[in-house]
Image (cartoon, rainbow, N blue to C red; front, side):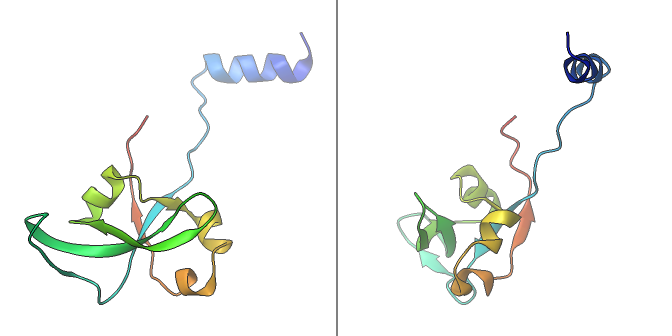
Length: 97
């Protein structure tokens, strides 16, 4: 076994885990409204699709946005267009372990 493999195995056995990156949702300001179909107050969120950003994801709350997978990382935000960077991110936990 190579030294780096041995070190990795010892770290794993001793309980070391890789820290997951922080996750955020991007609620778009001024877009909250009452959604009759969803039976509550909804808001639009900016989301990253397959390489493209969209301003049209709808959720009833921050928790609902997490449930629908609307979370992004800081590196996603850093690489995003300016209109996305202008949105104040809300840090969330998405317990999808």
